[in-house]
Length: 315
Image 1 (tube, rainbow, N blue to C red):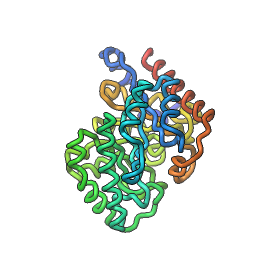
Image 2: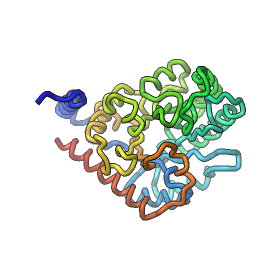
Image 3: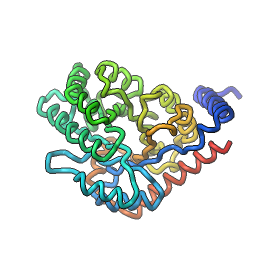
Image 4: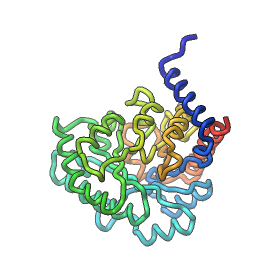
């Protein structure tokens, strides 16, 4: 039977993966760095969340960027103490961009709020030793564009803090988000164009998200390869935006693509962010946590991912 188009792409990835394994077995000695994005745990105490990750042998956390004001968000001292106690390192920080904190807004006060927010989060990310800070060019939860000049406002806004990314040694990770949730930058190609327009050494990286990619990309694994060296973090969820292994997401070819990028050789991360189905995920950050459900979510995801990774690396 003739292969389907996506099967041809996957077949080529498999060939390259197996060739790399044969020619460079040393590239497969280190596993991918598995993190977890904790903002989906809602209003749960940070120590409870970190304790859960430790229980399931997760060594990294993507911290909720919750410094929405000068008196809000994780304290540096307390957060460092908690992470140290449980032997967890900060991979990065998940920036949160609502319509009131929007780099592309047509309301100057909302752009200023986003700029001020980034200033706080860049410094916090550096204090935590995080590699990246996730940046969304336009608000999540606002799918309709204000006008035709959002790109110009967004790039102007981020340039206001671009030097700070360089100063603090933090990577600005531009995240493409599906068009059902935001009005600007939906694909890896669009993220690369955004980075090119900004044209600043502090804005050079990408945060991928396989849930958004399944809606916007022709092929997730191919898009990962196209992100290339710019990819610093990859958010994971299954096709239903739930635990890995609970849907139809092709985890195997995602893993293969990452190894082809030598992603495991760098300080780059795979970070589950299973928020559940729906148009606007932001309400999850204020939700009341169900500890048993979250335990199962983390356990199932890390077990399934590591199982698939181990199987592929033993081929």
